[in-house]
Image (cartoon, rainbow, N blue to C red; front, side, top):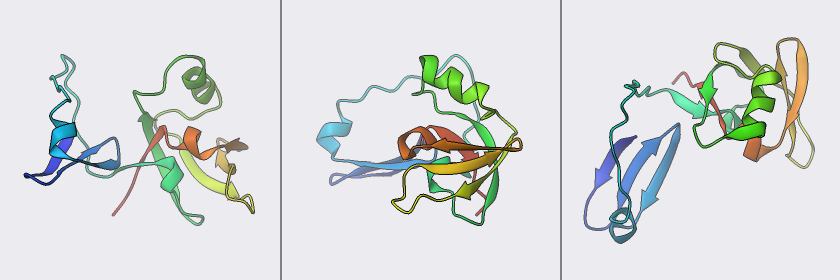
Length: 122
């Protein structure tokens, strides 16, 4: 997590490739503690759901908010750190999208794709 702005009207922070804006009264109810495991915050992290049609990228991991069988399913399908992924097919209605990964097209809904972290080159 990286705090971008903190004043008496709003608190803006980035976490796992997303920007969050909170009112100070809401932000005051959040407790943050340092993790025992040190992880470097990368500036160029984004969500797979933000990938554009003609882009190709590398997966850097899965969001910590994704747990259990759903997380295991994505890992089993090949959405692992270091894998190259691109959009293969678009649905006319926008959801789901088919992603090309490890020689296979896998369809994911936007909420699933938003849990996959990618390397976003600015």
